[in-house]
Image 1 (cartoon, helix red, strand yellow):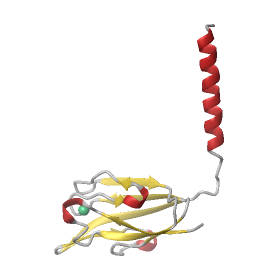
Image 2 (cartoon, protein in one colour; image 1 turned 60 degrees about the vertical axis):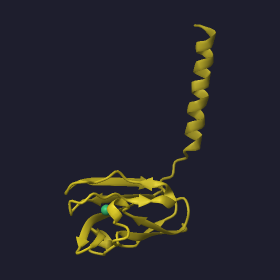
Image 3 (cartoon, protein in one colour; image 1 turned 45 degrees about the horizontal axis):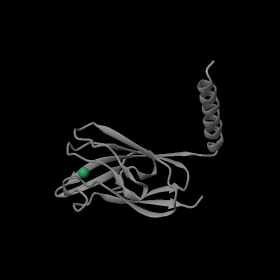
Image 4 (cartoon, helix red, strand yellow; image 1 turned 90 degrees about the vertical axis):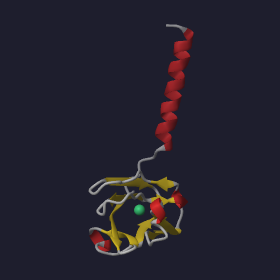
Amino acid sequence: MKKWSVWLGILIGIVFSVTALAEPANPSRKVTAFTLKSDMKGEKRLFVGAGGKIDGQVNPTLFVKEWDVVEVTLINTDGLPHHLALPDFFILSSEVKEKGEKTTITFVPFKSGGFVYYCDLEGHRKLGMEGQMVVVRS
Ligand SMILES: [Cu+2]
């Protein structure tokens, strides 16, 4: 075996063990999931909660815990293009352009407080398509 391949093997070993240490098992971490549907009312553009406690709520406030895994699914139900932006956590979903299209964002809220989520396409935010995510300290 050549010398460089031994060193490469050692390097790979170090990288693997460091990665393993950096990710401690955390069985208590929960996944909090929400579903939002896009909707409109006259000129208004809205998110409407689907399922769970937010069912039927317009631009529902999404309560989550700091460091839990958060999943938000956006379903297009009006045929207009939408996405989901949550800039405080550097999140921008892919666009859902047609009826029935879905997109899901998954992230870990790393700070507590109240943060805005919205759709920034075609002026939808100004037309009412925004809500709050409240991250509660765990
Ligand atoms: Cu939109």
